[in-house]
Image (cartoon, rainbow, N blue to C red; front, side, top):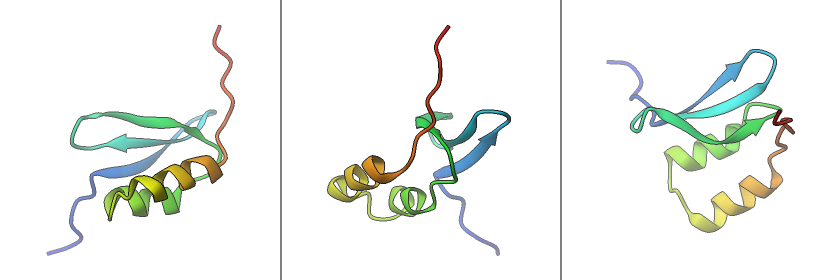
Length: 68
């Protein structure tokens, strides 16, 4: 039957980087990341341990965005 639909997926934004999309709430989750946040997505779609998510968020390189 195929793979189960994931709640959180990574989507590339042209010229910006990677963002995490929440399929349930239909909105962006978190910040813009330089690379695809694979470990973060696995945790979000898995156990959702607050301690593990905090650690992954602090270790995942984010992209600086200038607000004009």
